[in-house]
Image (cartoon, rainbow, N blue to C red; front, side, top):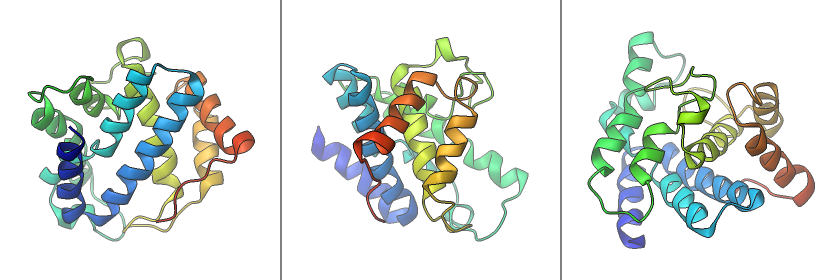
Length: 190
């Protein structure tokens, strides 16, 4: 199982080096958040595995868009927003012992219903996907992207704190902030 997941992650890395490091760092942070929250080992393992391949669907997004410097158009953004569904479609028939395809599908959903692809409300989103969403957002904001420099970890904290209980689950945000502020957690260097 680990070899399959690693192969999938490497496929994405080959196509988009920024996404590769992002997936690994997001997975590591999401795993740490899940442990901090006291989730079961089964859930922690599923979150880590899903995190390693959560952007698999970006293989269907033209690389010119993924690596485009500067702002993207509304059309380009609409193409990027298809990646959770594309990832789900690739993973849905693999017999993982965790709901990996569903976690990947839901990792851009937000608890107030403003996320995508379905606009699910918090009660309808898997806890694993909500944990991965926070890890994903923190890592993305804190890291360099082709279209912008890193905003830094403080901006990432500002985003999740400002939207705690609105976009992101409050317990998950609290666990994430505890990791960094009280337990010395750091994102791995790029």
